[in-house]
Each structure stands twice: as structure tokens, then as C-alpha cells.
Amino acid sequence: MKRIKMLLVAMLCVVMTFGAASVPASAEIIEGDKPREITVKEIKLDKPVYRIGESPILMVKFRNLNDVDTSQITSIYVRGNGVLFSLKYNEDNGYFQGRINLYTKKEGRTWIVISEIKVKNNDGTILVAKRFPSIEFITNNNCADGNHTIYKDNWVENKTHSPCTESWDKTISCNICHQVVYRKIIPALGHDISEWMLMNNPTLSQNGLEEKICKRCGIVLQSRIIPKLTPTSKLKFKKKSITIKKGKSIRLKYIRKPVNAQDILSWRSSKPKVVKILKNGKIKGLKKGKSVITLKTSIGKKAKITVKVK
Image (cartoon, rainbow, N blue to C red):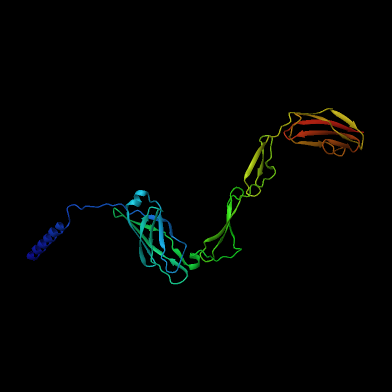
């Protein structure tokens, strides 16, 4: 039993010795920058329509690439329709481009399905372009020769948001390749000016506002301030009392200052069955008696006159 224990202890020592030797005293950690991602700004073919047997040039522009980035790019590969294409930078037009082998034997439409774009630069960092579109490839010999098929009344107006001040165009496009065949420029219409329109009524405490607008586009062309209303400072009747005959009408005379005061006047008869209020300060005696007529402004100025009917 003692011999077995000694053997187990010896084996444990051997395992610990070899295990400790297999672990380095210090481990080196290498840090690197995460590969920067770029996205496609534009991807297109060099021509919208091709002849049978022609091979198009694929053209790509990227976002967030400065001149230094562009100069350090060593290769760009585009995978489309299962084939890998190589693109090179063209300084004349600013596109990365390369001819793709996509020969067609009949007229029609096909799609170049872009499944992958990879960019490699000088320091080996791979920049992966995401969210790139597929491309429609149109083959038609007549369209490639400039002989398009259209409907003569198929005009489309590309209206502007400001037809009064900006011209716009009408176009007819080819039914096959969608290229614009005819274009007409429609001149700006000019503003259709309204009469003065009351936007805010003036009050005793604030100004009012009038505007002239374009009836077509709604833009405000002119505006002017309406001065706030002038309040009454003094109000009184020329007489304290008058006498009228039954059935007779008379206009009451009063003094109001300033003469251009604009606050609203209101009339009231204390006995409307004796004296009736007509319009604009005119009253009528209905039966014998006496009534007090009160003239009041909207800001609280008052004047009173006693009317006797005989």
C-alpha cells in the first residue's frame, strides 16, 4: 500500500513538471485595427444598352474614400453571376472599372447579380463593401444604334416643386431601353398674384396683417401691417335730454374723440317699449314715457341721454 502511494505521488510530480513547462512564462498579444467597411455610392454600366456580343464595362464608386485611400488600393474584385471580375481605377472619370465577360446571343433584358465586392489596400486591410445593387443589362441592336421605339403620346412631365420660378421638362422614353428620346423644356409659369388677403384682424392691442400670395404655389409675395385700432378717449351726447313725439324718429348726436376711434359702439334703451333703437344712433318713440339711452364703446366708455316721448 505504501509503495502504491509513493508511485502515485511520483506520477503527479511528473505531470505537473511537464504541464508547467508547456505554458509560456509570458504570452504576446497582437492588436490590430478592425477592417474598415466602405459602401457603394454608385454602380453602373458604361452604356445603358448593348449590341449582341458586346461586353459591358462595370463602373463603381465608393463612399468615404479620399485620395490617399484611393492611391493605396491595390485590387478590387467583384463577384457577379458566379464570375469574379477585377476592377482598376480610372483617373479620368473617378470610377473603378473593368470589362465583364457577359456575352449575350439574343436581344432582351438580363440582370447582373452582384453578390460580393472586396477591396484590398497596401497594408493588407480588407475593406468589404456592403449594400450594393444588382444591374439591369439590356441587349438591343436597334437601341444601340439610336433607333428607339416609343409611343408618340407617352409624354411624362417631370414637374418641379416651384413651377412659378423654375422650368421643368417633359420627356418621352424608349419602351425598350428607357432612354429619353425627346425632351421639351416648359418655362416657369410666373406667380399668379392674389388680391390683398386679411390674415389677422387688427385689435386695440396688436396690429393686423394683410398678404398677397401666389394662388398657384402659395408663396407669400407681399405683406403689410394694418395698424392696431384707435380707442375712444372721450364720449358724450351733445344734450343731456331731449323730447320727441310718439311715432317720430330722430338721430341722436354725440361727440366722440378722437374722430378716427375704431372701437365698437353699442346702444341700449332702458325702456325699449317706449323708445326703440334703430340703426346708427337713430331712435323712434313708440309710446308716451321716458327712457334712458346708453351709448357704450367696447373699451368701456359710456354716455347717457334721457329721451321723453309725448
